[in-house]
Length: 242
Ligand SMILES: [Zn+2]
Image (tube, rainbow, N blue to C red; front, side, top):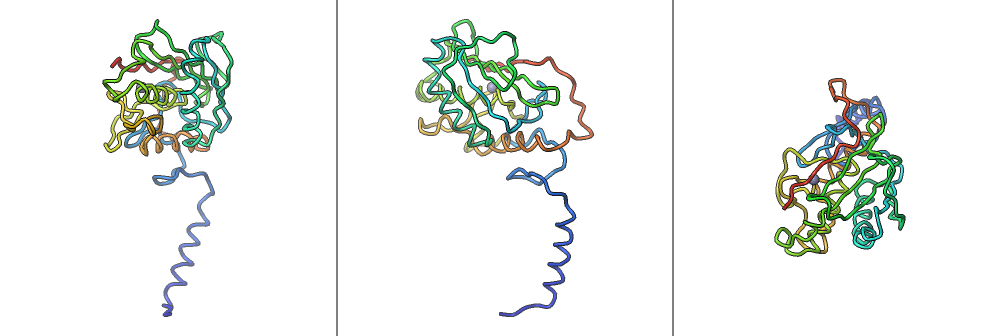
């Protein structure tokens, strides 16, 4: 094996550069940055509603009433598993009935509800003073709980809508741009995601980029150029009725 004399010198220089960079958590994709990143192709963090990051602390899912618990528990468990895969954060699905005493749950609680009183599914995005996602009311409209024409079957649609709304609950918004095959589940105008029942609850690689940045932002500083206005906590994202 030939050894070129120039290689050790080049390696030495490179190592010198590497050790001068502070150690920090980095997202799996994209270049490492010192500052929080809020948007990329196919994903966007809900800074418009005051969310900048997702902390590592676990979340709890409860239900608004027993009918919601009956209808939503299996979906909640499926999506909780996917959110854990995406973020490394634990999401515990309880059997607890809790309507909540304020409009904005705190302490990383999601109150899931299936109701005929809402025309559109939605999720509120509550946050701490530093911009950590902190709680949500995820409401599913009975009127569009069945939408086979969008997703081949009602079962596929329900899995998609639960993962989509809980994606909002932990801090993702609708992306401004995206690419296809598959397009992100967090798309707003027409949901993307996977079209088979097996994968319908899963997030796509572009959603994954969003979740990774959402988590990575927990250990980064807000960018010095950020002019994020203070928003009313608990603002909701309403999804179009389809
Ligand atoms: Zn949405």
